[in-house]
Image (cartoon, rainbow, N blue to C red):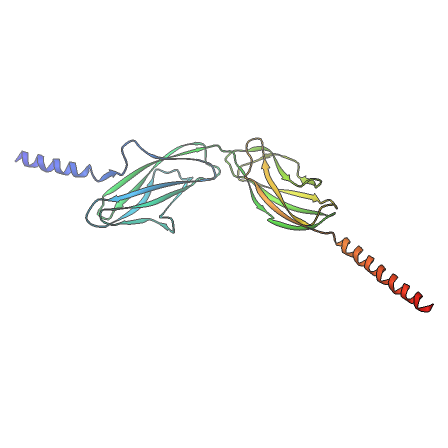
Length: 266
């Protein structure tokens, strides 16, 4: 009788050991390294080796409250994945890492719960590093001006990292003989998540031919630089050119009429 109870206990214990079944080898975790303000993406796989199709509910445990996670299969967000018999399905986990996330090593687990209660665990690791980042978040894409005149534009910069950056300035690469004036002068400090507006005044030389010119914009600081952005400027001939041309034509026509009038009197 005792042997019978021992056998039943052993079967129950063995069955409970499979309630949480790791989908990956023990001690191996999917890892991503990102900067604060970026997004980490993990590609995972659910394999169904049974002869029946199953549906798995997805959840994430152990993640810091600062981080936001979502699941998808490349399209709309979802929280369940259906896997056909003897088949597999891939899905993605995306974790948004805010700009103020501290540098560090974060761990979590994706739990896939089958409709019959069986669980599969995917251990994850997330490394957040390099808290310095700056970017242009608003700017003009194209402008029109005239040769010999000036134009202005504004760009909005933001510290998208998790730490203050210093000596922030806007660099504008312009054609030869163009003159630029940028305000304000380099900002001494820009705090995380804070925005700043740079006002740029550009003078186009009178010798500039009519053409499209591409200006390259970059934010620079002691710690990091922004991705390069562009501004297309369409330069047209100065409107005074047309007035002068009309005046010359008027003088030519008036001179011609006067000449023929004087000729006609002789």
